Image (cartoon, each protein chain N blue to C red):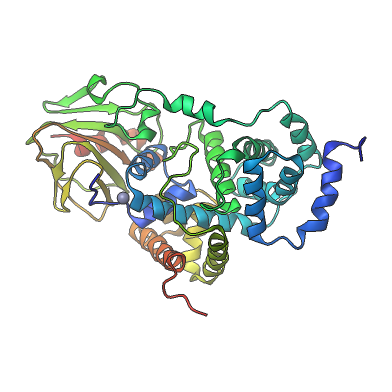
Length: 219
Length: 201
Ligand SMILES: [Zn+2]
C-alpha cells in the first residue's frame, strides 16, 4: 500500500499512552495495521511506556498474590498458537483493516448505511462516549461543507479518495487534523469514498452531538 | 521447602538476585519464559514487575482494591501470553507495559482498546538486537529525565494519567495546539535518541 499521509507524533504518543478515545484509537490502530512506517514510531512510544513503567515507585502488592497466582497456573494452560490462529481463520476482507474487523463481520457494502443527505451515508461504531466514531460513505463529486474542528479529527480512507486543502488522500492515508485547520474535502474518485472517522470532542459536547456531527458530515 | 506455600521459596531466590539484576536480564528471563513455562522464573518476574504494574494502575486512577485485582489479572496474562514475547523486538518492560495498558483500559472502559496487532508483535519491528533494545531503554530513561519540565509534564499526563490532548489543555489552561506541540517536541527528542542521532558521550 502506497501511503502518503501519516499520523501526527502527538497522536501516536497518546495512542501508546492509552490516552485516546475508543474511536480515535480505532483509527490509529487501523492505520498502524497497514503502515510499517508509523508502526515503527508507535513501537518507540510503547518503549517509552516501558521505561516509564520501570521508573515508577513500587506499590505494595499483597503477600499472597504471587502464591494465589502460582496455584492457579497449573489449571491455567498457557495460550497456544493454535488457539490464536483459530481467531484469524475467519474470512478476511482485505478492504477492512484488522482492528476494524473486531466490530464489522460483513463487507463494507453489506453494512446498514444510514442516510444523512443524498450521497452521504454513515455507519456508527457500537459505542458511545467522547466524540464521533463512524464510517462515512460519500458519493463521487460530493463535497463536505467547509468546517473547522472542535479538538482533533482523524480520518482514514478505506475506499476511494478525496482531496482538500491539505492534499490528496487515498486508501490507507490518514488525515490527522486539529482545530487549526479549516478544510473542505471533495470526493474525487469514481467510486464512493468510504472513510473511518473519529473526533475527540470532550464529553461536555455530547448534548450538542447533532450540531457537532452536522458540519462534519452534512452536504 | 516442600511444605511451604508456593510463593515462599521463590521469594528467597528473588531477594538474592534482585539487587544485581540489570534491565536486560528481565528481558532474558521473560524470553526464557516464552520458550518454556517455569514457575521460578515467573516468580522472579512477578516480584519485580507486579509492584510497578500496580503503581501504574493506581496512577491511572483505579481504586486500590480494584488495582490489586487488576494487577493480578495483568500478571496472570504475563504467564498466559509469555509465548508471544520476542526479546529481540521489545524490552520486557515494554511488553508488560502494553499488557498493563490494554487491560487497564479494557477494565475502565469495558471496551477493548483497539490494537494494531492482535497480541502479536509485527514483523516489521525495529531490527535492533536485544542488547541494543536495553541500551536504548536506558538512554530513553535518561532522556526523559532531561526533558524540559513543560515537555515531561505532558508526557507524564499522557502515560500515567491517560489524559487526552483536550483534557491536558483544559487542566493546564493552555491551547490544544500547545499541548500537541509540546508532545511533538518531546517525542522528537526521544525518537532521535532511539535512532541514534545526535547522541554522543
Ligand atoms: Zn503511517
